[in-house]
Amino acid sequence: MDKVFIQGLSIQTTIGFYPWEKEIKQTLVIDLMMGWNTALAAENDELAKTLDYAEISEKVAEFANNNSVDLIETLAERLANYLMSSYHIPWLKLTIGKPGAVHNAITVGVEIERGKQ
Image (cartoon, rainbow, N blue to C red; front, side, top):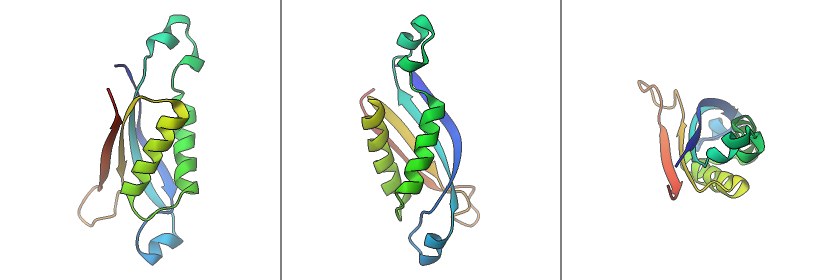
């Protein structure tokens, strides 16, 4: 299976369990690997037949900002469902990191895989 990816997408959103976290924007760093048959797009050099990573990057940020949750686990699950259904993606791996959330750690986060490769 071919893969289209977005790595190190940094977004600002409201996320967190504690009351003070609901009052601020925090940085999340997202890596997204999406299974896709890129041969169809490559055949005639057609963007419409592949996953437009620029559009998907914008949609990821919009989704995170329009769907505030407490846990990055919840955001990961909902975002994966949204992307797979909106873009008909058969498989994806999604990593969401929350840099600075834990003292002495570069980042913490979750990684999920959904669908079939």
